[in-house]
Image (cartoon, rainbow, N blue to C red; front, side, top):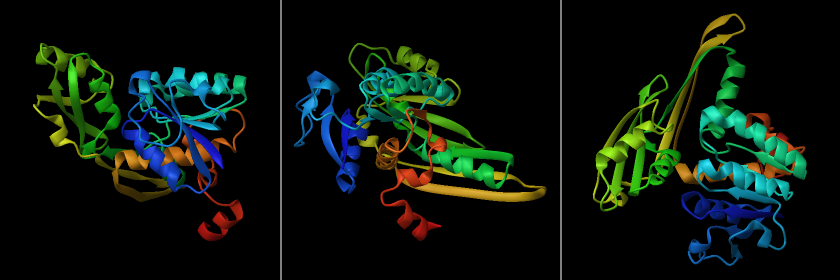
Amino acid sequence: MLKIAVFGYGNLGKYVVEAIDAAKDMELCGIVMRTESLSKPKVTVPVVDDVSKLDPKPDVAILCTPTRGIAELAEQCLELGIHTVDSYDIHTDIWELRTRLDLAAKKGGSTAIVSAGFDPGGDSVVRALMEVLAPSGKTFTNFGPGMSMGHTVAVKAIDGVKNALSLTIPLGTSVHRRMVYVELLDGYDFDEIAAKIKADPYFSSDETHIYLEKDVNSLIDVGHGVNMVRKGVSGKTHNQFIEFNMRINNPALTTQVMVGCARATMKQAPGAYTMIEIPVVDLMEGSREELVRRLV
């Protein structure tokens, strides 16, 4: 049984605990979170503010914390010899994170799987397979309509924001509109908050609309989706059209991917990896023989 520690107990953390409970080959051994939040989880395992306080030491830490704090948390675990899985979602910085965590993982004799979630993550594998099938061409990834967890967390982190929701609306050909709904603390200026949101790298490249709301919770729906289309060439044969569609509960699917990657950390050499570098069979529960016989 793999011993899993979960960092954070927000949207992702709660769903990870459920996914671990449903897996036959792993068990939750503890939750790590900020001291001021220690009373929140209703679980039977230890809840601590530092992973070093867990005994026995976990095999894998699943990091369900905001993207911008992932690198430091992962390094701490990796250097202790604990494998890590994260859902880092700033696409332009993924190679840099992989490079940084590769050093920490090799130092600690451990494994990191980075950007393991809905997208990047599962969608990355589908995009890679599409390119195998049609090496020349263009793939368009169209998200939504639905709630983006990474974008929502980024808005919530802005000083003065009491609550927030960021919806992604697909416009086609990988172009998106961001619809952001914010609830502010008293004394903060909406126009200043809106300017900060639009300047954030999560939003600066997209058409972004921001609205002031009295009760953001009344708008929240964690449903999301993706449509991916590749139009390309196989060998010298043109007009190959490949399409993939998904309608999902975003945190549930993201955390299921992370749990699969926790399993895969045990089968890789020390270092850091993205999902397209991991054999699909390593993500799955069951023996290799059974999986090959059933799926190939």
